[in-house]
View 1 (cartoon, helix red, strand yellow):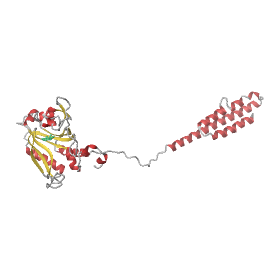
View 2 (tube, rainbow, N blue to C red):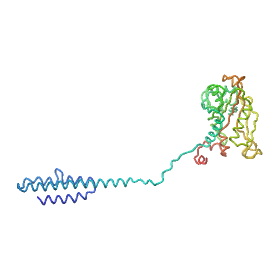
View 3 (cartoon, rainbow, N blue to C red):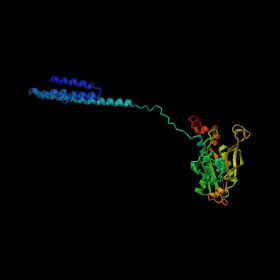
View 4 (spheres, protein in one colour):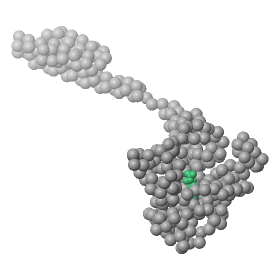
Length: 341
Ligand code: DAH
């Protein structure tokens, strides 16, 4: 029995020390120490021993058991450490590898120009106002003194949203003149940028959706001189201090008198070139003194108050500033185009 016990000890210790993983180690523990294990099998034969031999063998058996137990324990610790080392190695992070650059976009060129213009007007004491793109034809046309038979009201020109032609996609930002006066009263000094819609075919200079900036100033004693002075100052901020302007008579239903404002072509100095289409001048906005009928319709007494209004196209401004030759480029949002700005 002594030889048996010694054999178990040496075999067990060797194979336990060689166990490569937790499962193999557990199998060995069961093989030697389990209820049906080798050590148990030997101990079952203790009854056959003489009374003198029994305590000696009993002590040896206990020694073998605790030797095997502590071998299992220490191998288990070795394996755990190995596993941890492996895990650390597998999960190694090289903090010196350059990171992935987050792709951050930038402002669309048209909004760069819009923000510049807003800044100019804010510095002159104007408020920025926002208004609906779905508009009543009352606001888009009637309250702006537009006659019932005006061609702009045609279904062929305007996107109506109902059969009765009451609701539409605004064709201009001018209805914001009415909304501003109705909501805020006078005196008022505001600009209102936003999208407008017209039934135009897409080409290099037309789009069914584009942007305008409306402006309105109403107070006591406002004259055409204020209109000219302010718009000249704004235009020189945008196009440069030496810009030459021209105020040309025109007609708009909601202003009287009305004008269109041109700048002398900065490319050719007024001689005529492809940029100004040989004209020498480039139209930049429409303006005029707010029609007394429009003021009255908003509850403003035209004998006490007067004002001016103006409207300009944002795309044309951006195209001039960034030398963009085709309007479609502004809306196609091709990243290769936008990345240039
Ligand atoms: N709404 C006009 C248009 O779309 C532009 C305009 C002209 C606006 C004269 C004005 C103005 O406020 O006074 O053609």
